[in-house]
Length: 480
Ligand code: GLU
Image 1: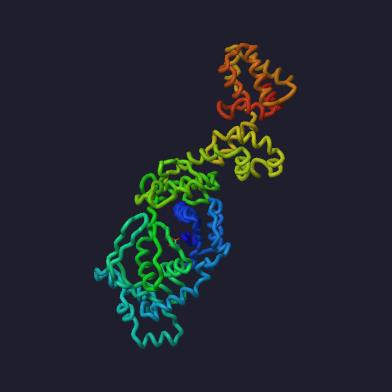
Image 2: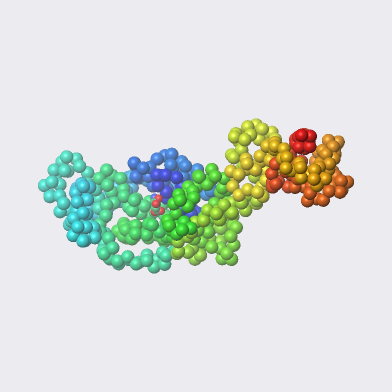
């Protein structure tokens, strides 16, 4: 069974790059009827927070991911928070020490730092060997430190050999035998180093495919060596290319928002985010652009994941969001709009009791918006009473069409029922009777009613403004 995981560190928000990684892991697992696991990598105690973990989980859920194994739901291979798995790391580190594949280092970090500086100043790459690390502290000093209760760090004795990673995205990646030295796996305070914890966890959680950003490629060789030393089966790896901004610099705040929750607050739909994110490195076999999660699950595979950096273009995401907004059913649109209208524009109760009007009003502006934050402004046509446009009055008088609007006001006043159909009928009748050309009528009418020249379809607009508002706006304009 295919098992993938997303393993964020709870040190900040969910970045769009992280969301793309999660998505590819998710799609691959689902495609193969496998499991997608959420693991929280919180061993950096200073920077990790529960708040960040919660917001990561919220954002992942908002995007539509579901998991049966994770810190919030438990599961057969838990716990799923690294800070709760310390005994696993200690026991596997001990095993390595017993097997002679790892060793204790009593040198303090400043002593190791000095070694590093010395190697660098001698033009050597700072690759440590057991000999070098052990020579930092004399045997007597080791004894003294032991007596004082000082705990050693544990270093992995990296076996020097050439290694080839057959990556699902990058193809064969070669690592030379001299590409690295021994490295710490457990700190003296008992906390594991990322490369070690990740291997122990991926192995114990039976992860079959490790999918992550290619900034981790150099870690992978260390991890492979650890798999070998621990006698674990090595999983498949897929390293996803970097995401760049349109200027081909690494994606940063300069290029737009980088956090998923910011997009949520800026009125983007999760469906649009998912669709846009998948195209950062993957393409549909027929190059289709608009695809929902189900179709992605059916089609996703690594053979169509590009090795080249993906270019992030917020404009395209925004365009796509507009497409998804138009795809929403009216009642879905009403539901997602709520967060952008309540309580700032309407009190909660009003939004609920006027549901029918809200749905119709929202649907009348749906084609005009690309992000949900534009909704309040677009709905203003229903609430802003425009000032009388003197220029327009003069021009209507010159044209001789002023009278037609008076007739229209009278006709609206005497209507028995106010429905879109009756509004349309009466309006057309007035045009016919007064012999005004349609274009000399509709545009000015919109301007009289709203003070703007664009907006919802005119009949919907008139109907939704309601008879009283329409008549009073007409009267205000005509009677000055
Ligand atoms: N916690 C690591 C990160 O956030 C996970 C990397 C991995 O997937 O192995 O970068």
